[in-house]
Amino acid sequence: MEKLIEKLLFSSRWLLAPFFLALVLGLVGLFVKVVQEIIHFAQHIVSASESEMILAILGLIDLTLTGSLIIIVIFSGYENFVSKIDSSGHEDWPDWMAKIDFTGLKLKLLSSIVAISAIQLLRAFMDIKNVTDRDLSWYVGIHMVFVVSGLILALTDRWSGDQH
Image (cartoon, rainbow, N blue to C red; front, side):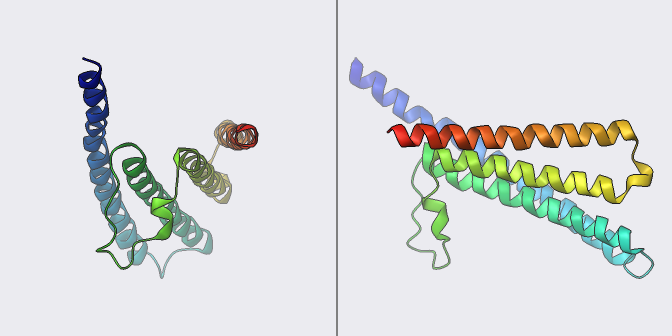
């Protein structure tokens, strides 16, 4: 009975596979948004002001960081929780993909969220005439929560790593 339960528990990890496939669909949706942004950007490149150009580029950077974050979660999560990926047939397989453990994944995830939040905050500052003081205060407050959370997580992981 114990062996059967352990086998069932071990096999249950495959229930996560559809979640990672859903993230792939999310990445496809994000790609559609990037294409839309590029088309919009290209149509207004000549008539746009400097600040509008910077805001458009920050939008592309924001989408790129989000896409990268999705890739990190897909590959690291799949390898950490479901199954190892055979990378022998892929010459350009990035080295980091097989080396990120759960702690590294958490830190990369939170640091990416902090970077995305910082870009959103910078976009708000660049468009300050169209942002209310209340909204700007919320942006700064939320960003600071992410920054402090990231620092606490990093310190906690460092302290717990020293004890093992």
